[in-house]
Amino acid sequence: MDKLTSALEKYVLPVAEKISSNKSLQAVMSGFMVVLPITILGAIATLLGSLQIPAYQTFITSAGLKAIFGYIPAVTTNMLAVYVAYTIGKGLAEQLGQEKQSTTVGILTLFVFLMMIPLGVTGTAPESKEVVTIGAALGTTYLGAPGLFSAIILGLIVPRLYAFVINRGWVIKMPDGVPPMVSNSFSGLIPAFIIAIAFAGVRYGFSLTTFGNFNAFLYNTIQSPLRSLAASPFTFMFALFMVSTLWFFGIHGGMVVVPIITALYTPLSLENLAALEAGSALPNLIVQSDWFIFGMIGGGGATLGFCIWMAFFAKSQRYKSLGRLALPASLVGINEPITFGAPVVLNPLLYIPFAVTPLVTFAISYVLRVVGILTPLNGTNIPTGTPVIFSAIIAGGWVHAIVQVALIVVGFFIYYPFAVMLDKKALAEEKGN
Image 1 (cartoon, one colour):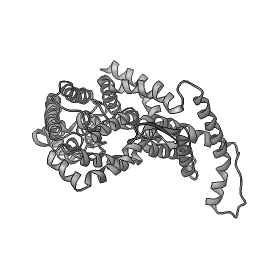
Image 2 (tube, one colour):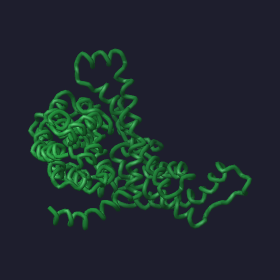
Image 3 (cartoon, helix red, strand yellow):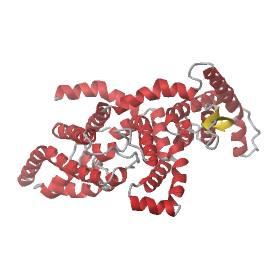
Image 4 (cartoon, helix red, strand yellow):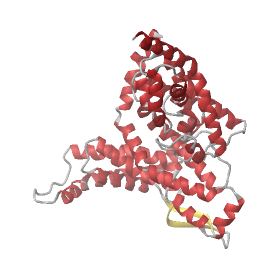
């Protein structure tokens, strides 16, 4: 164990620290966090319009509610890339020290994102069945899941170009008496012009290739292969393992891994939501909400079962008190009281169940989906702070909630032998004192 710890400290920790402090990843995470209300709003509206109960569907259709519910996802989850382009661009500008111009940078990023989508939509006229092309229309394909990687990449490039120009003093400087709002607007003109010309050239260059446009290039060369990578359960399990390992060293594993998970699995989540809205089979077995519902049940290390054991079965006053204090937070996925209070940090004994439990709970849920006992999650993004069981009902249904409870029991028994050893030691110390 000492050799493993030394190796992890030497090779893993430096990489993790660099990732956790990386401005780009922080911008991506903050950008997705800002649009979380939009994502949840669209997901809830999709659920309300797609709940497959015949009597309910008849009622909402006859009352006109189905159409009303459909308006919301059309401009939220189905256009998430539009919002993300702005929020990531703005967030990275703030990370780069351009707080005063961050709104301008966010708008510029959105402008570039929309400019990279070529005009022209081809479809079939409902009356004549003829193929019709509308040259002035903007296609919606890349405004949603297929355009997310384009939004992320542009959100990481445009702010850096803007900062590059600003830092070299290529700006229009206004007199001191001019209001700051006006001065900031004029100072952004030259960077905006340079960025616009540069990306207009990029768009034209891609129009000469077989891809046709920037978004198609990214989707075929980056997003599609990453989608295949994300579909593998081993990718997801590796991410769970890394969170547990980082927590062992006192590093917030979620802060390091979740931005990557968000970028990988948000497109898959949106695809499931779109399929749910269309009444089709859900295409992806793994989505982002698997993280909280089947992987991190009770927080990092899936510690809810351990917390329940401490609260109701521990004999030592130390662990009994800790369990009862930590249980309310653990029920909503917050387990810092456990990681630092048990502690899990630098505790080789607890590291074993802390790393193994999330892998086992997720693997069981995945196998249940593969064999058809459990359906895939619908893609609803579950924010931190959502209670267990309730989160499973939202993202899947009652069957998923029952499975989640069963997985909490599985976690309880994985932690059990290790918890007993810790409790006996603490009890002996208390009696000795």
